[in-house]
Image 1 (cartoon, rainbow, N blue to C red):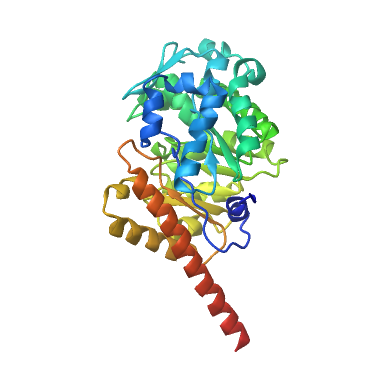
Image 2: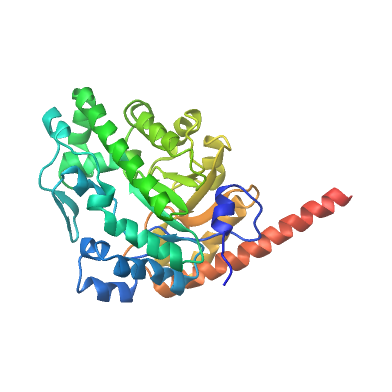
Length: 360
């Protein structure tokens, strides 16, 4: 079977005949087969078994016909190697038993030991590299998003303790950013060495910051992460999470050494591209909850996004955030087929129109 590299070509703004498709959290809770596995094992227990984690990663590839696989893992996985004690609690998320509040807490964090503590993740990547005929995306949580869990002790809607540390203890904040930045760099370099074909940095909650605070307290570390990864040819994606449209000009101005920026559903593709100065390929941005609608409505939304996106190279069809448990496997399969079919026709028409104009 031939290797499908359309996702990689889209990341690089190269010519493609149809749009690539993958979905954030495509390996997970909406799939009945996955739910059966979760009856026996927790998320972290699955991650610790490479053959099982690889199987879960492969399930949506086989069922949906997507153009990239996303490693089944969790952004909290590498944090345990730093000395953080946590659980992933159902209907809550990460719950930290030794939260970070002081300079001493930050100082106590150990350097990440990928081979010693996370060999199961590396082995999962190696298995998938052997079995996949599409690119494997691996990922890490961005320092702000990870810090918000470590400081708050659990998911937050206000990030009050996180912002309090930023504003009131900047020296502690930047020390924590440095350590988490080191973690991400080391972790993703190990992923690439094991066979990852693209890496994504998830900054799910950084949209809670004002642009000036993002520029001052977060962006320097993000720049360092991507600068340290710039020697690798594999595409690099930064997803600044939900409500992040106002941060895009700062990303563009920073000359961030990423290839792709993920957009949420609150900002249209043309507006996102304009705010990014045309510097990056873009990924997104269907509202995940559109998937609750009838297929005619889902296709209508997808069609509008595609029509807005195909006039320029460098677009990957995805959701504006992760899949939710109630999403329909059947609708996702139909949506993938629709995006492939419609984008192929639309790109074909566009190319024919350009050739016609050039021949006149």
